[in-house]
Image 1 (tube, rainbow, N blue to C red):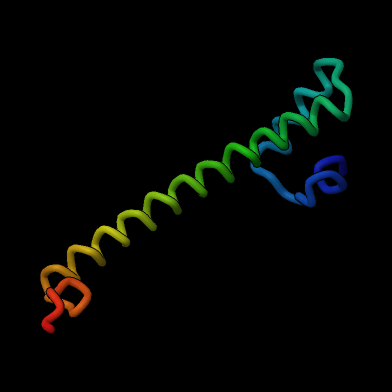
Image 2: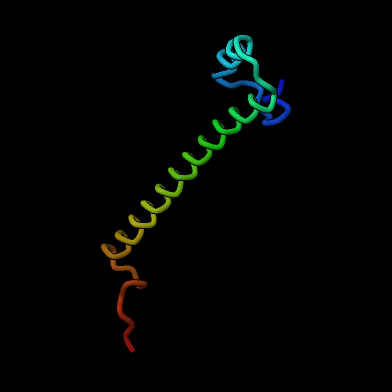
Length: 79
């Protein structure tokens, strides 16, 4: 319920493991929320990093393609 209220998450692969651990140790709802948020932040950062890398690779490929195809952007201007 905490994850749903704070993070809008209704399912997560770690829910059953988290529930078992909560029964074994004393933690506050804030402790649990912090750990779930760390997981989500780390995942988001990984996706953003990968998206940036793909974008840079595509830009590099487009630049190479432009040079190979001889687009007008790479041609000297004739006066």
